[in-house]
Each structure stands twice: as C-alpha cells, then as structure tokens.
Amino acid sequence: MFAEERLKAIEKEVLREGKVKVKELAEKYNVSKATIRRDLTELETIGILKRTHGGAVPQNHTKTELTYIEKEDQYLREKEKIGKFAALFIKEGDTVALDSGTTTYQIAKAIDIENITIVTNSIKIANLLSKNSKINVILTGGHLRQSTLALVGPVAEESLNHFNIDKAFLGANGVTAKDGFTTPNLIEANIKKTFIKKSEKVFFVCDHSKLFKKSFANIANISEVDGLIMDYIDAIDRKDFEKKGMKVLSVPEN
Image (tube, rainbow, N blue to C red; front, side, top):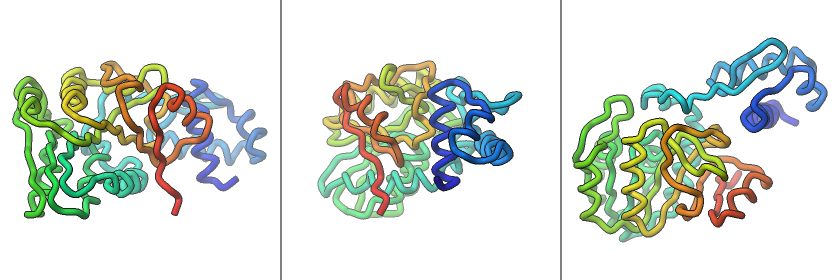
C-alpha cells in the first residue's frame, strides 16, 4: 500500500470509529510505529484528527465553521478534480445553480461551454464568471456573510423563487448516509434548501474529508438529492448511500 492510500485509509478509520491506536495501525498496515506517528502528524496538520497518547481522535471542524479563506486551500487538488468532473454535467442551455463554496467555485472555473445561465449567491463565483460574456450570471441579493462570502437571508431566498433551475450543485460541511447533508450555520442551510426546492436535479459536491461528519443544521436528507460527486469513495460506503436511493459519482482516475 502506498503512503497516500494508507493516509486515506487511516483518515476514514478515525472518522468512522472515533479513535485509532498507533500499535493497531502499525500491525494492520505492516509498517513501523514511527511511520504511523508521522502519518497521524500529517493528518493532524491538515485538520483531520487530533493526536492523543498512543493514537488519535477526529478533529471535528463541523462544530465550528471555518471561513472561506481558511477552507480555500484545504484539499485543493481534490476540489479541482471534482470541479472539472462536475462541470461535465452542465449542458448548453442549462440554468445552473452554484451556491457559495470552495468546491462549487472550482466548478465555475471549469465551465467550458456557452449559452448557459448561472444563478449563484457567491460573490466570488459571480466575479469570476463576469469575465465571460457568453455566460448569463444572476447574483441573488441578500445579506453578505463575510466569513463565507455568501449572500444569505430572506432577500436571497425570495429572489430564488423567481427562477426554475435545471441543475443545482451545492456544498456541505458533512455527509452521512443516516443524517444526510449538514452545515454549521442555519442561515446557510436555509439558502441551500431553497436552491434544492427550485431545482429539477440536485447534486452535492464534497471531497472525501466530509464523509462521516455531521454538523448542526440539516440541509437535505439523502432521499432529496439526485447525486453526490466526490473525489474518492470506496465500494462499501457507496452502497450505504445508494441503498437510500442516491447515486454516488466519484472522479475517474484517468
């Protein structure tokens, strides 16, 4: 097993089980305890877990919301891959919703077709797409949350009632098969719910670090969503979601 594969496996295990032990991991992956300690340190550096005596526990960032700037560089390579893959689902003539988020921003960067309408509550996405005269951009009004650079609140929600959206691509801070998609902030959850209500098809875009995490505010149950687009998910976890009627799409390796 390559080091990157081992890191992903350890990350998944600590999130699923709630704790891991150095000795057990070393035996399981047939490496030294020093190697596992380095792995845990690396995962702690990027905010996945917290080192404890003899092991580690999850570092649950879903309880306290990170700012847009803090999230922007986290899992950037994975988000870029998701963005490019998700953009392939957008067809000429579509009206597409992109909510404010670092992964949906990568979708906007990857769009390579014309004659589409983008509805967004993200000032960053609107600014990016304003440079393309062939894309019609509609920016919701509303209150600007400076931490997430999202337009939210009653004005933003009401503006969406004027549109019929073909496809929505939304972000979340956590996703589980049992609890669905969640986020730390209730106001952010409400605007996402409105996007869902006005969209014919709904896709969430999440990197693998969001799996098995649950936040304060519910956005949607699994049954309300057409698809989850991820950079990576194994077959067992995929089945857990698909049993509940949601298709899981992972980025092809090539």
